[in-house]
Length: 298
Ligand code: G3P
Ligand code: CA
Image 1: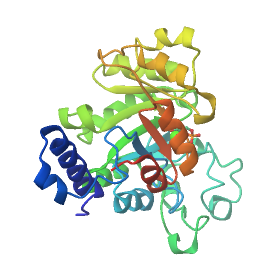
Image 2: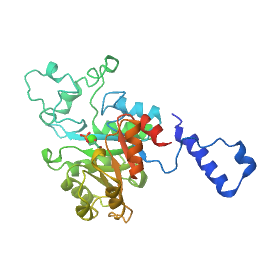
Image 3: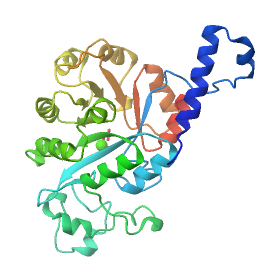
Image 4: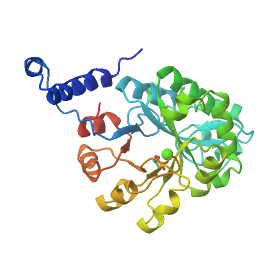
């Protein structure tokens, strides 16, 4: 198993902090400084996996993130014609697969118009780089199993829920079957998000214990209404300021905890430091290693 940088870095930072607080002068002199690590650094989420380095939303992308020592994965979930939940961002298969070559007569090549068996035949890696030829679109079930074996966590986005009536119930059911609704996963390893407030309300109603996030930037006047059903508000990073982040933090979500903010999609060190300084709790990035290093994360 990969040994995460977190283990060493966190231990060094915590030891340094402990020694500072207890005045451990002799040991402290021999203890490496925490260096750039910050205990208050935002959590980093690998957007569609480590998608700057491997094809997005594939098992290769979450394996790459695991190798980088990043724990949180973000993905996108849609549904096939025969009702299988799969991990893919776009409404159509054209950008990230060879679907036009394999199924030339099936325009506009929507995910929802293909069976899972048909989708399993597509190459979802060659568009990114020849080294990833043969990479497949994973089903959500396969994806969850790989996350578990990698000991990763999931920020699961229900994508385009208005196109897939009932997808909230099906997603929750699959999470349950895959063992992702036990205390360990619900408590620390899973957040469900969507751009659709109705979808997040539905998830909250189905499983009130789940942590949820709304993707968007409600006005400060609107925020209180979101606190009834979501724990986190996840905005585009360019559309927020410190007052807005503080307004979110001023509310308690459905579980009685301070509401949190995860900003997307941040790929440069400068932007990461800017949103960290606004007070965000998480940063969603295609280059999670770059962001983690820039903000002093573990
Ligand atoms: O998690 C935030 C981000 O994924 C939202 O945008 O289009 O990449 O799903 P998109
Ligand atoms: Ca997404």
